[in-house]
Image (spheres, rainbow, N blue to C red):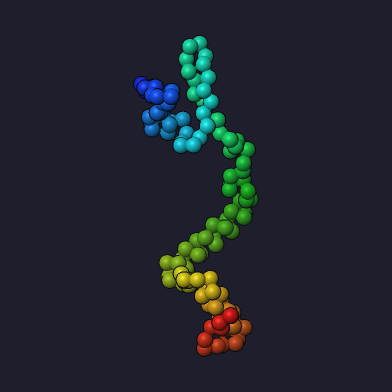
Length: 116
């Protein structure tokens, strides 16, 4: 893929978006510029070699992955069925809610959530 670009003031060049996408570069990325046989070569240079980092698939065994997927499916069903709480306006409101429901679970039913 080629494109005709113009060198602007101070040597600035704008690479067309299709070239940036094809090269996998975005604003702020570093690019090494070199000259070989009269040609200017631009090579993307990531600061971090991402190929050395594990992906989520590498972090979990197939059995762990099945458990995670099953729990995600269960939580999605709960959300669709309306079995969820919140959103809360403040963290204090959430803590009151949790204390109130923890009391119910222990058999201490209170009529009002406690204020702290």
